[in-house]
Image 1 (cartoon, chains in turn blue, purple):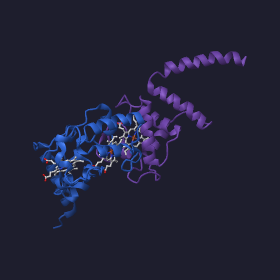
Image 2 (spheres, rainbow over the protein chains, first blue to last red; image 1 turned 90 degrees about the horizontal axis):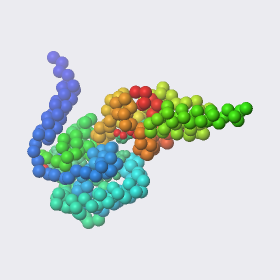
Image 3 (cartoon, rainbow over the protein chains, first blue to last red; image 1 turned 90 degrees about the vertical axis):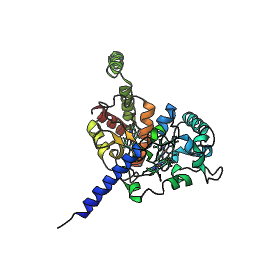
Image 4 (cartoon, chains in turn purple, yellow; image 1 turned 45 degrees about the vertical axis):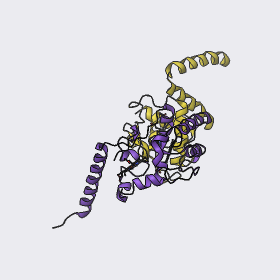
Length: 163
Length: 138
């Protein structure tokens, strides 16, 4: 008998993936990072990817990022100076070491003050929370990048990262 | 004789352009048309067919992940799109998303970003007008 291993394996991977997503969507959790509520920030920082919660990075990170939107992870996210200033002020006010402190303390563990990390997905705490996620899952066509939080955290845009 | 005609013709043209081209999207297209005439003296109007080609054509000048507009906006303009970072994009066809291309600053901002990513250069006024004309017909 000729078993089509490849399609079978792919099918299993797809099945496993949807099971993981489902499980994630159903699990009730308590890890809460208040989502962006400012409509301007939602519009300008939430059209290419979800608008990341300001309490996930320290103020120094947001300042540095907002100072170089022209080369934003290889994309051009530039804005006029006035809009950029208003967004910076929102992010800095609600950052992990300012207004958003009570939500974020653990996430900033292991980060040197003023090192201004640019990626949430490179914070040591984020990396350790995700160490069990297998490589194939990151590469899955519905995920593609670590920055695609909503692919696994169905409620990310409402601020919930349960599990 | 010529000069006498020019004035009423001009007025007729003005009335036509304000009544026929009422909304902000039509105003934007009219502005693009004026600019296109300056860009290329042989300009003879925008074309939905050329817009469709621009939308689906694969370019090699931009980023390898985004060879065409369809990489994010999808092959079918009436369907939803998706960015590479997993964010859904509302359909770009005007029939599906009527508010499209009514905010000139938004339109210019995204042409600037997306043309550079896909074509590796800015889009010409002709290309912008063609693309919007195509989407308005969809």
